[in-house]
Image (cartoon, rainbow, N blue to C red):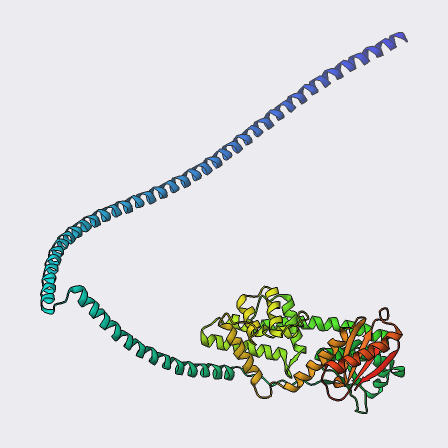
Amino acid sequence: MVLTIITGVIALLVGMGISYFLWDKMLAQKVASIKKNAESDAEMVRRQKELQAKERFIQLKSEHEKIVNERNSKLSQAETRVNQKEASISQKIEDLARKKNEVEAIQEKLRAQIEVSEKKAEELDKARREQIEKLQTISGLSAEEAKSQLVESLKEEARSMATGYVNEIMEEAKMTANKESKRIVVQTIQRVAAEAAIENSVTVFNVEDEIKGRIIGREGRNIRALEAATGIEIVVDDTPEAIILSSFDPLRREIARLALHQLVLDGRIHPARIEEVVEKVKKQVEEEMVEIGKRTSIDLGVHGLHPELIKLIGKMKYRSSYGQNLLQHSREVANLCSVMATELGLNAKLAKRAGLLHDIGKVAEEEKDLPHALAGMKLAEKYKERPEVCNAIGSHHEEVEMTSLISPVVQICDAISGARPGARREIAEQYIKRLNDLESLALSYPGVTKTFAIQAGRELRVIVGSEKVTDAGIEDLSLELAKKIQDEMTYPGQIKITVIRETRAVSFAK
């Protein structure tokens, strides 16, 4: 039993030794194989790096050679240019030397000629003195006395001849000037054609008959609110599908027409809505005036105007001058000025600018007490217009002295435009001025907020502030207005003065 165990142990030990020997041999072989593979990989990496280094060296060498060649090329070109400049400078130096020699030769010739001329001049002077001495001996007069007699005789002859020439030139100039001025004026009128504009004091608003009752409103409250907001008279009669808007002010009629159009389209017609729409339309009309002013200035080629002047130009569409539309009149004067200035050789653009702005004072809210020409001149000066334009505006009715040639051109063209047959109606202008004066007179009283002259000036409607004028005060105000109008104004028939607060008091100036 023991022997068997010992034999087994010995066998186990012998097997373990053999296994260890074999494992050690295998491990040695594996290490050798790994080492061999590592050496092979290292050699391959070394060769790759050497190849990359060689390629990089060749690339850098090529780039360096390229840079060197470019530099050499530039140096060669620079050297060529320098050589060319040296050759050119050498040629110029040779030309200068040759010219210097030529100049020296010419100077020598001139010196010789001058010497000869001086000798001849001395001889001529000597001969002249001898002749003068002989003449003095023959005539018995000295040289100074002879000179003075000759000069006096020449003066008298020159005066008589000059007087004749001046008279001839003056007569010819007068005839030519008259003929030329007539030609220019006639040609200017022929080249600018404009239609005769006649302003009316009524506007017809087309509306269906069933809408008329809604416009009038219960007990007339809608039509009264519309008249109070716009300052016009609205006539609703038996005329089919038409309402008449009556006012001397075209701007008020246009605002009323647009407001009525919007109210009819909207369908909501009541006093609060009427006031809201009228205020909205007023803003729209102001924007439209700006657009009209811009289009007019662009059409005429007048640029660089101040925005306020552009707005006033647009406002001229809703104003008339002696029955003639003010914007059409101003456009026509601008075109006439351009044509006439071109014919006279003046600045056509500046003349056209002055012609367009010459009546700007008629639509200005400022300086109402001044004539429109002076008011327009002050506006032009305020908005930095050129002095020639300002003077042309202020002097076209001779309120100020003319200081430039453009001023008489504007004055003449304004007269041409206004003198066309059918262009103006003096009676209409006087009528509008009377209505404006009527409104201004009532507006001068304290507490008065709005004044409207309606019914062709037969009624003055005055709206007062409820916080400044009491119910009892409107009676006194209507009486005072009636008396003042009666004392200070001239008018046909009678004028009805209606003062509106919450109640109305009516008196008549007879």
